[in-house]
Length: 213
Image (cartoon, rainbow, N blue to C red):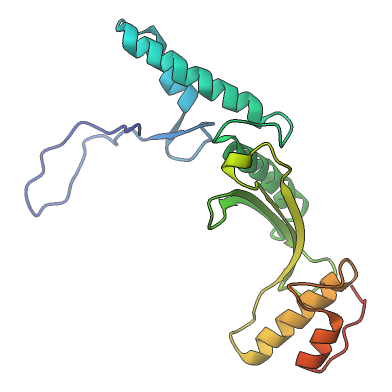
């Protein structure tokens, strides 16, 4: 862990902490992505600076760490599925999410977005959505792209399309409407959504599901 902080300032018990000048804020990540009002630093920059120190052991260790980070950096920009680095899947999803989020927000203002996250099992995942062109204002069409696992980073990734429909409220009728709309919007691409077939929808909700986008 790398920690940066200002010099300690004596504070009288019970009084709020004050500073004559604003403390320096450093935001350290692999890519050093900007985050106002923090000063961004990449991990390669941080560890790379230690390669020239006088102590040979410190310089050697910093060089080894920097070499690994450079290798992960290169793998993250190469073809998905060929990476070997433990952290590379995270870099792939985060970099792709940042670029895709910018594209979606420009193309569909207020109606498109992308983000990187992890599954409950810790697998890096990319999620992207835009409002469904034929649905209600609660309907979104999206994709879920995820790594199968850090120990299987070189395996093909999973790519799944989806339709998400939000709830206008928590009532039973709203839930029913959301499920029906999600199924209708998905029906022309796939005959099943979340385990529901047209026959199941007919039996459970008493409606026919047509291929009407």
